[in-house]
Length: 320
Image (cartoon, rainbow, N blue to C red):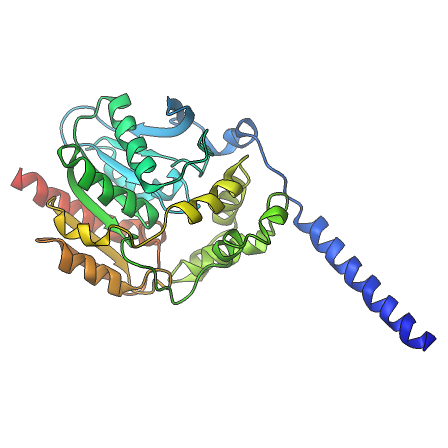
């Protein structure tokens, strides 16, 4: 019997040491905006006051001429996801991108509200702050949902839409990144406020790429460090609770703006069938599928995806 108790004690001790070591290795407390800005907010980044927040913004390109385009990132991403598109657009068009509330360097809202309607209000407030009367909205994933709902709520402000693997219909994912699964767990939430295994982020980013070999350590650094921005982890959990996919999907058919729909054929989070449904529901829209790309095709292959966007923008310009 003593041998058995010693065995149990040994197993228990090993378990405690294992858990303790894992906690030490994954310990990741919040980081301040000031600490993160040195790396992630060099010029032309700026911070503007909107809705009680200091919103991280980049506003580039000519102020006259073509209709400005506003780029809206997806869940747990940041304005940096649009680097490739911005480089290709800013010589001829004003390009505006910002970290949505709860993400990137913008961080949490003052009142903890993350309903889609609040994001729509933020987009319109930003347009007002920048003196933009009318813009083209392009959004990926959750940012796509914000884009089309803004177009519905304020049609006079939205000249056209580019929806990139956008949220719209009830979710039926083939696979959910581990980072999202953990964020949705109320049991793990207290632990995740002070820990964040880098492996979770690495796995999650690879999961949304069609070709995981394109994911670099520098890319993982960006997603990892900006997730640590003070308040972002709690904001992510609340965003999942407050802003669900599906409600309002029937109103997608009411969209009248010229719309380009881009989709990654290897998207396991929002399958290509949703892109086909957007194309059916939005009269006159165009769907382009990139068979080898994943959930963030604009980031995975900015050159190829932007070519489709530029063709669309030329056509929209000719029509106006």
